[in-house]
Image (cartoon, rainbow, N blue to C red; front, side, top):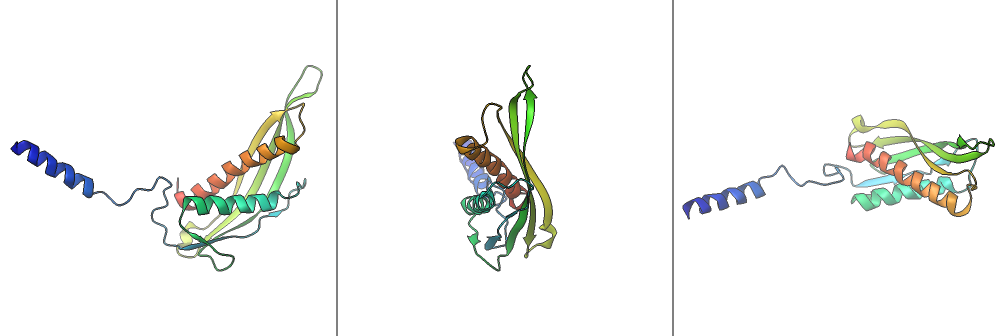
Length: 167
């Protein structure tokens, strides 16, 4: 009975003596309260209308959903800005009759991150991801929407991890 008492005390002590609150996104130690995402201009040679706005909103949504930072239009303690630098479609594999069996849509985005609270976290980096689709389909409609959504989910998560999660 006495050993059970000590075991219970040990269990309680280890439960309440952690190193702080663990956050699965890794953002538990952010000093900032606000962030802003400036419009990501589309400077790619091949222009797909609207993807600049889509990316800007996707990055805003991800940060809002994974942190309790407040989105502001100016004066944010954390600032994201940059441009879409590349949007290209390339054939990846060919059939016996020299037709594309698979195509790849690749989007590259240059991101500048500024942290007014901790300048050592500032960076400028390029993020890129791709989506493969069958060669007999055109990158329009639902194929294009799925491709852009997949690419932006990955890039925004990579930007988040680099800037806030530190993974």
